[in-house]
Length: 216
Figure (cartoon, rainbow, N blue to C red):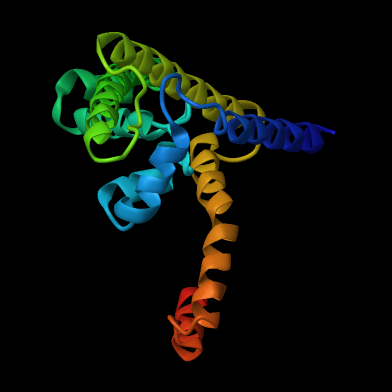
């Protein structure tokens, strides 16, 4: 019964995460942004970030930042624990010290998410000059503030999902959220690969070697 309950918690929260990935950020033309990514941003740092965000970045959903601000904050405080005496003492205090570090990590996540969200809002506005019809309907301070609020809240919700999966589900919730986002893109990648082989753009022998090396 305990295992079943944990499996249901894990699957249910992952489904919630995937459903949230279809809610658009207000004021953004998601289709125009997706077309831009598909034609010009593939293979760039934006494409890499979108991979870890589960495809939410290029669709400008409420989960566009994904869990990356939380991961960045966690790495920062892990480094602090090695170089700053105060955090080193907290690490040695056991569970109580870890709770305080976790709290600091959450506060830092909010700050990092807000900064990154403002940068994304500025980036989206800059695309209006590159894409016919634009991506942002009404650029300006109001749009930026709304984007910061939306994306920061989305990141905090994803962080809560990950921590809840870790506590009540199976495995590390943050890792599972990253994994499910990457796996969600796999069917499209497989279809595109098959099309490339059919069109002669990819040699079947080379594809076979790639698959062998991946399994190896």
